[in-house]
Image 1 (cartoon, rainbow, N blue to C red):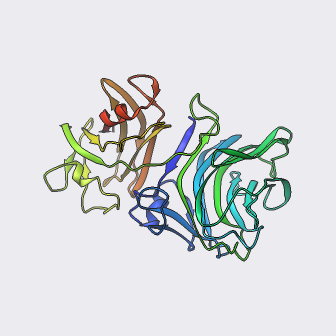
Image 2 (tube, helix red, strand yellow):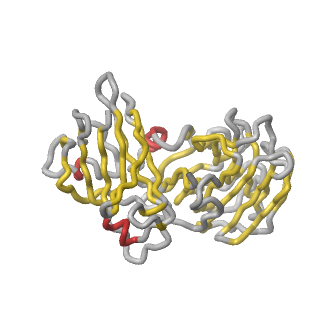
Image 3 (cartoon, rainbow, N blue to C red):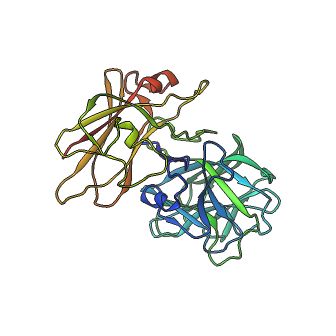
Length: 352
């Protein structure tokens, strides 16, 4: 695996609580999924940086990683008035303790700390301005001696700290990410700040295993049925219409599978003209089971006669999001091209 997760925040339909069913483990009261100022699409993650300990967005990386990265577009209406509170990205260990922290300074610099505002590792020149989106990407390697704390702003290196002590705890790993303001502080004074086109990665695979660069995260809805229609729709005349909405409507419209090996396949809305440089595709679905016993589902991406199979997943009794990442077109074993994606199908199969 290299790209681990991506989020454009459009598929929650503005329902902030829905994000806790998927990639986010904590969104406090000063955090919302907002329509006010998306970088791309319809929504962005908004954090009121004037808040204090209530301005927390936390994401589990899904594994204990030695090297990890995160990239996103970030909008600040004004530079912070407190250079010790505005956390652009904080890499934490499994015990939720800070390993490496990147703060936005009052003059538009980025400061890297070991621990929670404990030891300053380095500071960039002025790279941020208020009033516009800028793309930032951060990379850490956790080590006592060969640690890395690096960041790029709009594709240009702002910090590249190597041979560092980046291990602030007893654990040589990072397991989760944090954005917001430092707990117990008075906020950064930057106001409502937006995050969009957000993605994470590690160094474990052959693709996307280092700085990826400025990318958009696009929500492409399902837009057609195929001849494979085993799953049963709750109403209407088209299966895809039951599950294409951006705002989840729970048990109002859906498809269901009662039988082992039920398969349905769907076409996906084409990318806009000019789209290129596809780093990865993420298939996802919000699902639940309605009875006791096994209920497993597998999602796959179909490209021509080739199948990129996702994980075989056990579904829970409460709604939750499930995802699979595809970095290479299974028909070509090369990076996805727009034409290949536009011709691809999404398959969903009940496997248990």
